Amino acid sequence: MNTLKLIAASLILVNWFISTNAWSQDVYPSRAIRMIVPFGAGGPTDTLGRALAERMSDQLGQRVTVENKPGAGGNIGTDLVAKAAPDGYTFLISTNGPLAGNLTLFGNLPYHPLKDFAPVTIFTILPNMLAVHPSIPASNVIELIAFLKANPNKYSFASGGNGTSSHFSGELFKAMTGVKMEHIPYKGDGASLIDALSGQVPIVFASVLAGMRYTDSGKIKALAVTSLDRVSALPNVPSMAEAGLTGYDLAAWYGIMLPAGTPKPIVTKLNSLIVKIIHTPDFKLRIEAMGGIPVGSTPEEVTEVIKKDIPKWAKLVKESGAKVD
Image 1 (cartoon, one colour):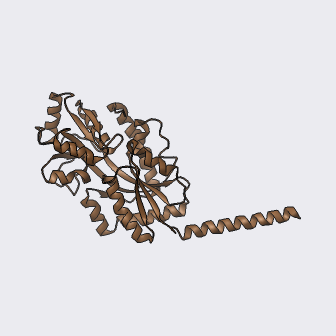
Image 2: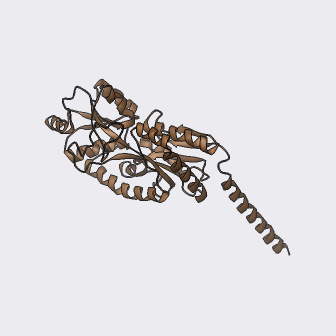
Image 3: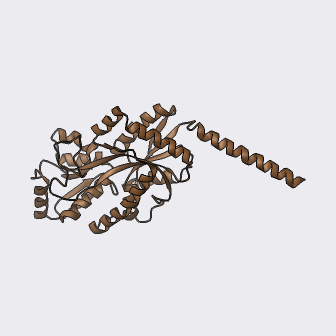
């Protein structure tokens, strides 16, 4: 009899848990949500993330708070989300650096891009630009290559940090052209652009979003964008391929990720919401004005992109000799 009572009590408890869990997902979210940005404030990931967080807060009826957790090429903030509770209240906006390239560049990451996350969507693609200080005697990419080959190891290029897409953009440029120049990593595009503007490091790879305010004013010269095609925010700046580097194509994609094990209804709800936001006409124009290309993919498509990017970036790291000091 005691055994039967125990079984009955257990069944009641299981049913209660199932119904409570289902209810909690139905009313999700019932409190504020954290968006983790694994880079510093004011950079492209932060700027794009805050624009999305603002619109999500309006749509969800709960505040989406942005928390910057920079460090180690984005790995610190990315790992924080990997180890967060899989309840839908902590999510990540990060790039293909922490979610693909850093696996080879940094070696032993404390997380795995494919195992420790539940993908939601690719939010947008944001190309970088190659820009130079006016002191560099080059008005296009071909002239810059010739100048650097005539002056091997005399110049450096600045990026937004180790493992960022701006870093890899520079490494791909080196690998494809054979030029010799040192990489100088900064803590974000804002910092790298300051030294580019002063001429201290007169060659810079930075996001279109961060750099176009200075190219528009003529303080630095944009020679090319790193995407396969031109971007609407800089219609007069050619792509690397147009500028002479056929096959060059490296842009940052921004993925929205939840911790692995997050219930599928929550993943589905956030995917539907974010994709809807991305394709709202005014928001789409806002992203394009920042130099971005709105996307809005399925979770499955995110996984496929990461699977393709990991070996692609591993090859680039090995061929270029890129390393983290």
